[in-house]
Structure formats: structure tokens, C-alpha cells
Amino acid sequence: MVIGTLAFNCLLSGQMRFHFILHISVVVMLGAVLLLSAAPAAAQISIAVSDTILGDYRPSNMLLPVYGELPASSNVRLSFRYDASRINIKNIIGGGTMKISCISPLLSTTASELIGTFELQCDSAGGGSGKLMDLSLEILAGRDSIAKITPDSVFIDGVLQQFQAKAGTIFIGDAPVKQVITEGLEQNTPNPFYLNTSFYYNIDTDTPVHFRIYSLIGQLVRDFSPFQQARGRHRFYIVTDPGEFASGAYYLTMQTNKGIYLSHILCTK
Image 1 (spheres, rainbow, N blue to C red):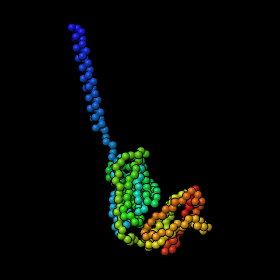
Image 2: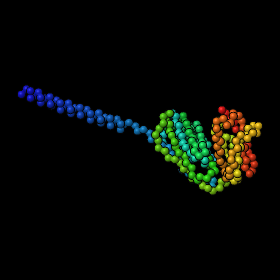
Image 3: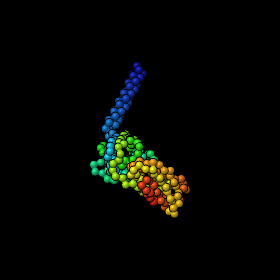
Image 4: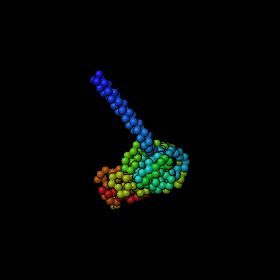
């Protein structure tokens, strides 16, 4: 009888321990759920470049809004890809009520013949959603009627972030450009250059174009194949091989039906 009572008591105490452990587990799980639900949600990061349609009038300094949502941070770095054959990114405008707090964020650009990248960096950003900044850009002459600007990466305080991106599409009408164009060459960038550089040039009327590079003593260093070019503003790329150009100054010339235009370029090793 004593043995049976002890066995029943042990069984009962085992069941009580089981229910106690189960109760504690449920309490812990409920506490974790409540803690997670009470924790603030991570800020949603998004970048959306506006679409636009251009007709006959193409301003040389067009402002394209960029909207989105960013967390408040001490440093933000955004990069984008764009169609370098049709678009020139001139500046980034922030400050005021915009989420990019810098009035003139640090801007760096690189471009190949077709694809360009630009990156902006600002030492502070206001949290929340709304207008992030304005892109100041110009539309170059060309054949393509559509150009895109695509958000590429977001760094917050030096850490790469996941984000939602919407590319901006610029629809460019094929109507003739009506503003007055002063034909000629602009200074190349970068200058001085090491291997690669590019420059903008303006054509007043459709014409054959012939580029050449000369040394300071008049020796022909590079003779580019002539080509037909339409009226408008264009970009030309110079890609050199290591050792092709010695360090020093050179003359770059552009010959059209109207005349010969000259610019100085510098090469460094």
C-alpha cells in the first residue's frame, strides 16, 4: 500500500513538473512574440527616379526628381547607371525639404561609350519618405529615343543595403533641336588623363567630323576615322593603350565643314 502511494505521488509530481515546464515555455514564447511585435520595424529603403517626356524643347539644365524612403543617417551613398550616349549628369541638388540634406552632395561620374555611372555622397540624410533630391542633367543629341536612369546601390553609414528600385525613363522626341548651337570642342575630362578620357562637342549643321591628336611640335599621334555627325551636342571617347602616349601636352583637333577647332589635352603616367 505504501509502495503504491509513493508510486502515485511520483507520477503526480512528474505530471505537475511537465505542466509547469509547458506553462513556462508558453509564457516565454508569448513574451518573445510580444517583444518582437513591440520592436520598431526596420525602415523601408526605396529609390524611384521620375519618368519624363521631352518634345521640341530640351532644356540644357533639366531637373529630374528622385523620390523614395531612407532612414536617418550620418552618411548616405547612392549610385546609379544611366545611358551615357544620351544623358550628361551635371549636378545633384539636395537640401531644403529634401531627404538628402546636403545642398550640393559630392558627385562623381564615369562613362563608357554607352553606359555611365554616377555616385553621390552626403554627410547626412533625413529619415522618412518623400523627395530625395533633383538630378540636374542635359540631353545629348543621338538616335535613341529612350534613355534610362537606374538606381544601382545604397550605402547607409558605410553598410550596403537592400532596397526597392524604380528606374526613370526619359522619352526623347525626334523633333529637330531648335536652340542655337555654337560649334566647337569642350575641354576633355579627366584632364590630365592616363589611359581614357572623353569630351563634349557641338555641331551646328550635319557634317563629316574628323578628330586628330598632335604633339606640341605638330607630329600626328592619333588619326581617328572620319564619320558623319548630326547637328547637336555629342560626346567623344578616347581610349588609349599603355605606352601609346608619353606624359605631356597634346593638341586635339576637330575638323568639320565649317572649320577646324582645337583643344589642349594633358597625359600623365
